[in-house]
Length: 337
Image (cartoon, rainbow, N blue to C red; front, side):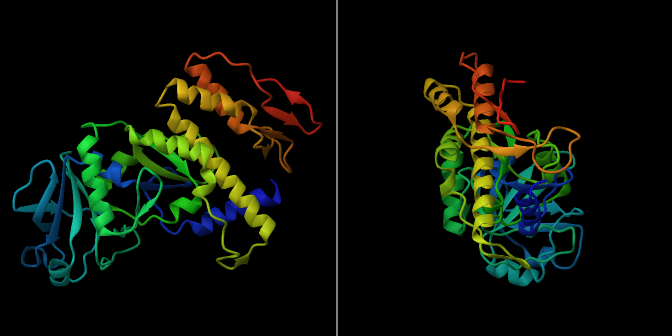
């Protein structure tokens, strides 16, 4: 493993301050649109301090505005092993409004997003709800107004039950996201969404719904990934990184996001998107690799964007000349495997 790859792995772990439910060696985040699409009912509400005080088995929520589905004046939610501890419910009821998302599962599951005060606390297994939260455009939503505007715009055009998918996102994007508080059943539902095949990779994953708005995210990720990935600060934890290392890490994260863009684009076959994929068949982006079972420095270089673009074109039934995918240590171009 090269020095840069080793550093990338270390820094990925250092930046992962918020761990979600997922497979081992993964960090799962949930987009706002995925939360809203997964819920049968979405509403704004505050905790009823009279009915929710203490550490009982339920939380009573005073419903203030229903955005999706139907709800009465109050909703009673059952606490779970992964439910948040709301601290002083008197303060919560008077000052804090939350976005609640419930699902009619068995057992019922729910999630909550704090829109104002970050006054939630919990134990080692508790998620800390609050802003910012990532949208499907991979940008953080930082204010109550932004969240509510996005929810309303999404519900106005979203299909009733869109397919969900997990995508890999760079650390530079995931570190902008706050944790989402949810019952265990809710997060298990989301983490069951099919994952990208990334053996051995410590990956940050974002759950997104497959909706028309996602096509623009796919194209922007491929064409302008550098706009999403800033250069790391020189000081990360106890480490100080020199400029070449920071630039190498940024290049790797840009490549990761462009590959994610191709995986998203698979949902949107069109002539325009086929032309975009064909333009990637000569893409110069490379990364080192070692053959299975080999240990040490990379034994060659590959062009991952070329391969991903060619494979998607093939799945779409579009004929294209296979480009060079791999360069061995000796500099010989190898054919497609």
